[in-house]
Length: 134
Ligand SMILES: [Zn+2]
Image (cartoon, rainbow, N blue to C red; front, top):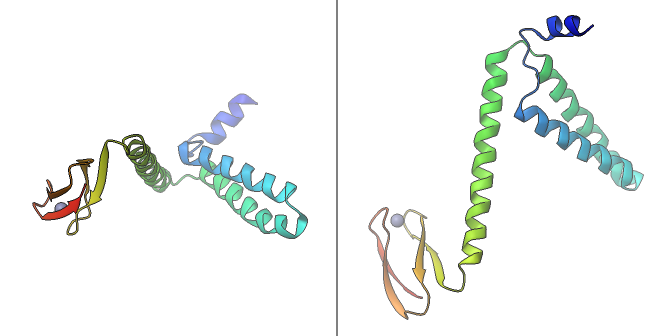
């Protein structure tokens, strides 16, 4: 039985990080469709089936190149999401000692010490300078 399964899965994508995410997302949608009042819950039952169907499709897919590209895309988004969240957390922790401005020309976030009055801020990325109250 085990060997049969192994032979069946040979050359197929199997489980990857994106699939684990999809399965968790599918379970959340399933719980929402089960526990919300049926009028609202029914709006989650179709996405739940679609997400789980897609996860199964990816698991058994033989187009490894495409599935790996999807997985890489997922990792890129996930990393970007986590690092932006970390940045927000750091800004929050430093809010008493620093002020944050974004450069008017390149949108880079710049950190300046608080309580220095009006100061000229020079963007270290593009060199644009602007005056703000710290
Ligand atoms: Zn700039």
